[in-house]
Image (cartoon, rainbow, N blue to C red; front, side, top):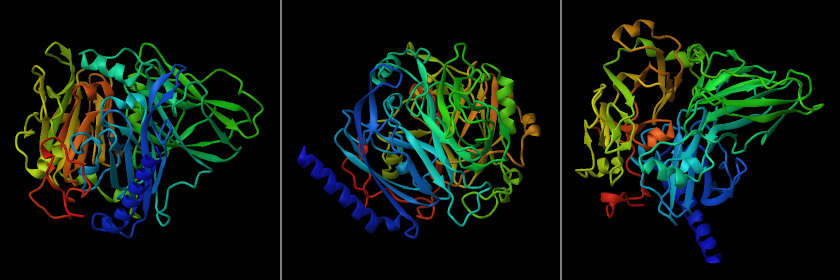
Length: 548
């Protein structure tokens, strides 16, 4: 044990020296470095009162909070002490010019049991609320996730006064079964039953308390890190002022309740302007016949006890309520983002699109097993990460065009699906949902403008109602049942990027693909070369990255 600890210590020291000495080539040396060493282990957890095998980071469930500032360089050395391969991905962190670090199997080799890998991330031109999560093997159902806050640089104006405190709320549904049992069900060709409960920061009913002083205002960063369910949040007796969505400052509208779909993140300001009591922060499921609810405590420092009255009820199955709320969330055109210039200085609605991609989700049975698909293609991983195969020019791992760029409405098929688009193109993507469930779509490596959403079938005439002035820019978008959502996106980030359902059952069973943003350029201005410390696996084993 002592020798193992010494090995970890010396390895950490080596990587600190390595990062400081050699990383300046890959990232801006003028920006600060933050160093982390994480040990990923199994551990007993009781989030719903039943003992489970959880995934802990440095003994914590959820994992440690990451605090950073725009353009900071994060050096995160991850030791895998599990008995199976492991990867961490960084929801919403764009990995500019560096999809090798994205931490999904299409880009990054898994960390083997007993091994380690050092992620080299830069919060390049980003602010806002994000989170990290384990991307392999349905590990997300066991933990291994945590919040990420990226603050503005001191010289950049923020469109609201500094809050008295900044709190993170990781909300999500939860199953009492271990992730290995859930994975077995999915691998057997079945889907999962309804979740057993809801968690806030890894705990059940009233498991968290947030203390506030009367008259002061607090920031709450809310992320739905769950597996299968859209959620609604409200603060008993208090209004929420929405100020940020996934790295974009918003028009500061007031809400009594807020829908947070799978994979989405919001920042709200809550002012302690009520009599001194303990109030409930209430989270409940949306669009489900059975309503699950959990609470945390908003504790006034001068509290006289529990606040009188019942818990505030929230919306349940109402789609119009959620659709109208989504349309009300707009980009703050005059506020600065990560840079001093106003967000609205980029006139996204005036740029002509050169291509339209239409993506339809479906739920086919393939070979007698339940699968999920995009344009009929149900994703299966290759034996080698796609980005490594692309970099080393290894043939036979994937083929561009294995997924159509329009719905086929045909039978589902298994494929390592990769769609190619051109670097610096400006395109439109329409997500079409012909099913009866809410969908939530995420794209790694990018933010995009949600220019429209509505019920029914999308057509070219739908563009007449697009918001081409102040649509919110974000990285995860919901699509309501029998509805569509449309986005505009500037393809300014070369790489191999995962486009996926944030419903983790659907993602695991194939509702995802990779978007290859391609250029013939080999300039480091367009894309960084493979990291020197990259793990190599599959058909890339035995090859070389770059000399130290």
